Image 1: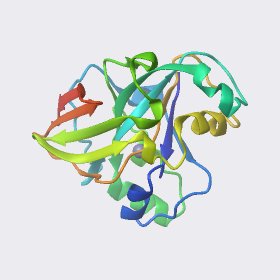
Image 2 (image 1 turned 135 degrees about the vertical axis):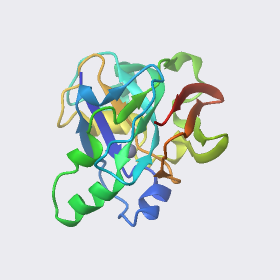
Image 3 (image 1 turned 120 degrees about the vertical axis):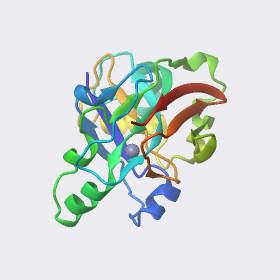
Image 4 (image 1 turned 45 degrees about the horizontal axis):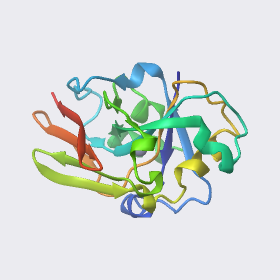
Length: 204
Ligand code: ZN
């Protein structure tokens, strides 16, 4: 399986990092070794002084396909969960400044937290109006709604599948809203999707 991530999919987050609003989705990937499952603790890697949390809605692909038209996109997923795209922001800034790829800052081991539970789409009122948030030590630090995406989920499926064939079990991280910031040892992270707690783990 592969992990496909979308950058700058919320205007408010693009602005907080001084990035342009993209006219096409920004796409990058993480290897399967990036996954951190089952609400296991996240260990801050020693190569970064500033690992940022990015809470994201994650779509699980249930059917293989390429060049998928937007009107058929909803046939390719049936569950949505939550993830955190941990980002070594200091390293990313250095790489960006040199025009180099982001992989070391984005795709390192255990950088892709994934919720143990996914919610069936048919149990959700509207995939394009999903509220989600991240609390750290009991305080909400990031809050988003899929209605605020620059590129909605079905459009992401269309655009990504022009370049990359989807396979069963692939995960699509759909971008983070504003409020990203560093985590520190001892932090308790809790992620909620439409009020249900799906993420609950510690930083060590
Ligand atoms: Zn992200």
